Image 1 (tube, helix red, strand yellow):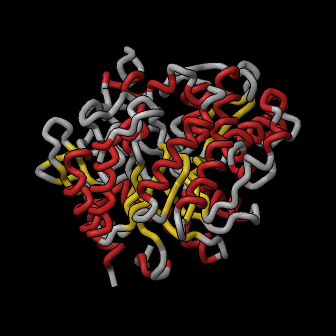
Image 2 (cartoon, helix red, strand yellow):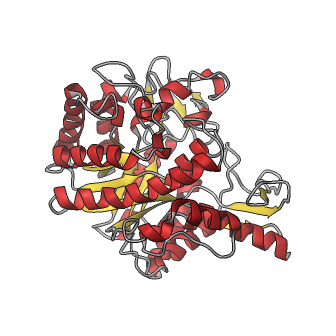
Length: 447
């Protein structure tokens, strides 16, 4: 890749992203209530190494320093999320003034540094008090979410003009309410279906709330996506890929675009339609977002497997296929990223796309005060080049946010999976800019 960031135009948004539950720490001070991740992490064997999101990288106390680092590396967008339980310790009811004050200070600091604050309303950290009442499966979820989203839009909307409603709904519904691998650890279709439906309704309603309360708002919501490739040209493998694709790539964006849930002769989708009476909700599930956030980390190759319930598909891992992969075994496939950008743009009713997360985990080693992460640099170069190609071919890509600024709490992977441009010693909280951070500085600041 021979070009610099200027090749994307002067109005292109280059940013870095974090999330409250993964970065803030300070889990039980200044009035914050516990989230589902605080509770889930206490369950033995759920988080690698027994890690807990109690301190993380202490962004709550070190936000000024971390924002200075983001600015120094050349970024001009800072994506963060509100912690629902820092604002409403019980999920609803009394507002925590200290929590609200923290976000005002964070936003003010962004603006003072010339960083655009890009706020995510919900990034996976539901208040535990609401989970005790059913969480994302509850019939009361819409009421809870409406109250919360309305508050943050009204409170911060005079300063924050860029909004993301939900972060990766497929991620938190499937991992948290179907497979049980993430908080709150629920399993089964009886949890998965209502969680899906509530998330689809919430993302659209959240868009309407921000539109109502924030003047000149730029509103989006983010979708995880992974191109699903069949292991062979056999019909059974191709059908398996089609079923998984419906879940990973179509389930949340198509209702948002007014198309209702995908169908295509997939019995699981028939069940979803019947149990949620989806036909009644088509209008409420739709919202005309200013952009959709695309979050792509890897492609998935699958083959037919009759033993797997519902989807009858199993992954053929990148390590098995000897394909390039990250430390988590995720396939590195920038061409696939390019195709997903093209595919979402080709829906036709998408106004613009922002890559709201993209990055890679490798086995970083801090030695003599430096981290030489050439693999991560190569990853970014490949993916940014693929994005440039899509943009040149007419895809209206308006921004790219690297995941993530600092090493942090990586959900069920704990502190072992490092995605940061800046290395964190979690015992001392010492920050060390990795080679990839310096690469970004050179890429963004080159004339």
